[in-house]
Length: 82
Image 1 (spheres, rainbow, N blue to C red):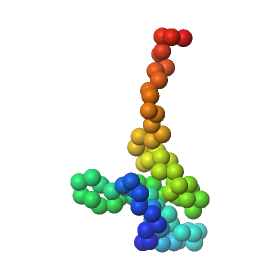
Image 2 (image 1 turned 90 degrees about the vertical axis):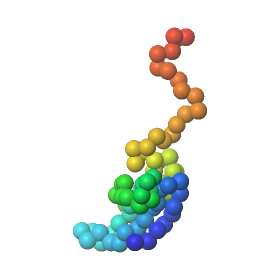
Image 3 (image 1 turned 45 degrees about the horizontal axis):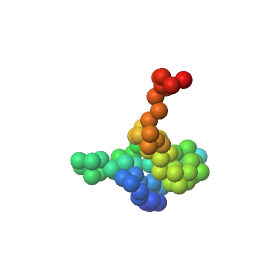
């Protein structure tokens, strides 16, 4: 397993070759808070998707189901000023 990038508790790795198509196996891993072990959270479809997630950490968070693209100010859809 080859580590490509570690950023904000997320790790991007290349885990060998996929037998079905012969392409590299890219994965997104997240570190467990208590055990400090890395667990697979998302298996990328291709190298391009992995590259985009490495550039945009918010996208990586979104793929893992964590809060991402959080606004500084919360706007209620039920605002009475309309």
